[in-house]
Structures are given as structure tokens and as C-alpha cells.
Amino acid sequence: MERYVFGRLIPGGYSAQNGDRQMIGGMVLKAASFLRRRDRAFVLRYVQTTTLGLMDGSVSTLAPLFATAFATRDPRITFLVGLAAAVGAGISMGFSEGLSDDGSLTGRGSPFLRGTITGLATFVGGILHTLPFLIPHVDLALYVAFGVVGIELLAISFIRYRYFDMSFLMSALQVVLGGALVFASGILIGSA
Image (cartoon, rainbow, N blue to C red; front, side, top):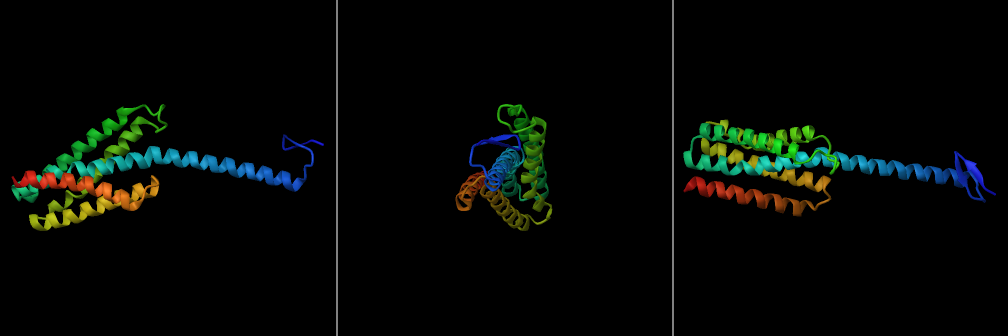
């Protein structure tokens, strides 16, 4: 005998307990699917764009900053170059991300929001290791900046581990390798 329960046709042999379990199980699956979609949208719209910006800001500004520090040994000039690099990189990355797609194809949301997030994150990634050059002693500023770079790269590695299902060790190796290559090029160019 078939029965209708909450507008659904239930085949013969229905018991209220089994029907309730099926209905609750279906609701749980729908809720889990909604949460996965919401989490995916959050990662695509906010986490991915923030990580992109932090990584670009942290790495792309290393070479000009440390090349200037080693070439001039002047913390004020180094700070100004780092500030200019962070601002320029933030603007560039903000426009690049905002203009890369309108969000309809990838589901990554508003181009304006993505560009803003990426641009700000790029600026933050570039300015953090620039701030130590406000210290008037270039050698001390360099040591503090080295430490800040290490913290930045580990933070990026953790974000990749946490949100992109990646091994923390593999993420740290990739991020630190990229940072080390750019860092070394800055030192070599600045020491020439």
C-alpha cells in the first residue's frame, strides 16, 4: 500500500519511523550539499583571491626591496622602494584579478570584490616586510625583515594547507622555494 507523507509518495510497507528517517536523512544530505557549495564559493571568492594577493605581494616585492637594501645600505630609500613596490603590485594585481573574468563562468563572484581583495592582500603582503626598514639601522632592519618574510611565507603555507587540502610540508616547500628564488635574485642584484 502506498501513502503520501509530506507530499511524497512512499511505497508500501511504510512505517512512520522509517519515513521520518528517510526524510531527515534527505534533509541532512541537502544541508551538507548546501554547505559544500557555500564553502566552495567562500574559498573561490575570498580565500583564493586573498592567497593570490598575499603570495604575489610577499614574493614579488622581495627582489626590489632587498636589492635596494644591499645596494644602498640606506633604510629610508629601501622603505620608499618597498612602499612603491607594494602599492604598484597591489594596484596591478587588483586590476588583473578584477579584469580576468566577470565571475559568471568560474563562479568566483564580483570582479570588483575579487579585485579589491586581491589588491589589498597584495599590498599587505608587500608592505609587511617593508615596514622594518623604518628602523634607522639597515642591518637590524634586514634581520627583522628576514623574520617577517619567514612568517609571511609560513602563513601562506598554512592557508593553502587549511583551505586547499594540501600537505602543510609540501605547501611550505613550494612557497619557501618561490620566495627563496626571488629573495636570492634580489640579494645578487643588490650586491653586484
